[in-house]
Every structure is written in C-alpha cells, then in structure tokens.
Length: 321
Image (cartoon, rainbow, N blue to C red; front, top):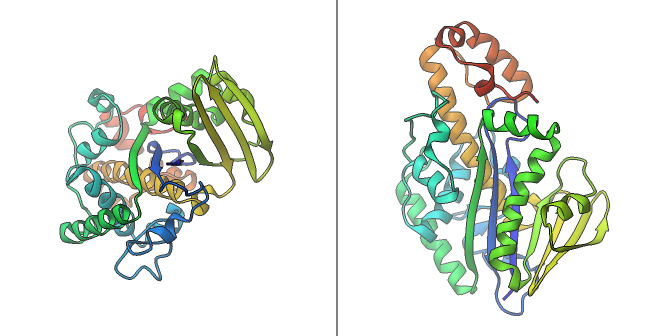
C-alpha cells in the first residue's frame, strides 16, 4: 500500500513568534498511485473549499483557510477533528504539543508568555462539532481503506531560531534543516514502502541535491529533476527508498501537504495567542500582533518601556533575521 507524506511550515517570515513545521503521513489503498485525489476519496467528510464545505471540514493551504479576520474556527475544526479521530480528545494546548512533538517542557522556561501557561481547547469551535467531524473522518477513512500513520510537528521558538541562524549564518538553512528531521524519520519508519514525500518549495531554492546528500550521509541521493516548479530526488539505502519532491504550491495541490500546512498554522496561532495575552495584560489597550515584519515594528515599539522594566531581552523576543 503506497505511503504519501506532506511537509509544510508556518512562521518562516515573521520576526516574532515560533516557526512550526509539520509532517502528515498517510497510507493509501492498495493499487492507488501517489497522485490519487484524496479529496475525492474523502469527499463525504472533507471539502477543499470553505464556500462549498456544507457539513464537512476543510483541508487546503492554511493561507486559504485562515485569516486574522475570520479567526481560528476552520483551522481548529480540521486539526482537532483529525487528532480526536486518531487519538481521542485532546483539550489542552500543552497536551497537543506533547502529542505532536518530542520536546522538553523546560524549553519554555525562558519565555514568560509560555512558561506555566496553557490554553483550553477548542478556543473557536465547540466540542460537539469537533466530535461530529471526528466521527465523520473516522468513518470516511475506514470506508476508503486509508490509514493515517503520523502527525508530527517541530516547533522552534525565537531563541532557538536565533541560535540556529547564528550557527549556520544562513536563515535559508533553517527551514531545510528542520525539514530534514522529518525526512529522516519518514525514511527510517517507512523507507521499505518507498514513501513519496511532497514538500512546498523553500522560497526560491531550486537545488537540494547537495543538502540532501549531506543530510543523508551513507545513502545515495539521485536527482530526478531540478527546476522552478519541481525539484525531485530519490534517496536509496539498503532495502529502503524514498522519493522526495519540492513542489511550487504543494500545499494547495496535495492533500497531506495542505493538512500539514493547517496543523503548522494552528499550532503557531496558539503560540501567538499566548504571546499576545501576556502583553495585553502588561500594556493597556495594545493591539495584538501576528508577528510579521511591519506590524512587529509597531508592536515592539509599543511594548518597549514595559519589556525593559521586566528585563526581557531581545533574544527571546525578536528574531535576528
């Protein structure tokens, strides 16, 4: 049975808040190719558009399913219904992070907006709705003989992002090096089934062969094609093979990549919610920020005096790039 995986990020561009990178791994029915339209297979439970969703959840690029104006509901219903269908109810942000990522809780100790803080889930939807969606997903994937093998996330907070950028002297490697962690785990766990991994292009990068070769020391990396729209490779080891494609717009074209995009965005938005709540308690009438460069300047200016009084340093507050 073919294995297909998607990897996508949220938070690469902002100056404030974490970077989150998620992988979704699925097993398709025997005889199906990797290009199978999963949206069609799961059409009773899942829509690719908000407008025609009806009583279904939506899976698509998070840029199409979330805005500050519309809020978290669409993202939340999708992410939590998938999690609840596979793992049962998860009703705390801290529990969601533990479920999706291998992290030590002490990573939060240096951040006063995260340390000891939590969020009750759901925040924008409601338990009955998510239970209903989760049941619909469970029935639909069982009917189509699809297996959801893994949802895994990596998150890097500001200090950790700055540390990696200083180490590599290159922000562009930040995204690749953390994608590489996901790729290695997929290769280790599913390599005997020749998984196909679909990743959204990393900015303007078209050439990944050298980076993959360095990351997969001792294995063979073959280039299939390298160009603006598609850069494709095979990674070969003893009894293992993995196909990796970096594709322009993969998060709108391929179901697991789109779902990974939504997971990453939801997790990042919950981190940002904690961050804004902290500062709104400290600075009267301050407007929340999503952390993107222009608004980050406004926000940092407005909290400047307060954060100096609190002894909060630049290195946990803002990225160096």
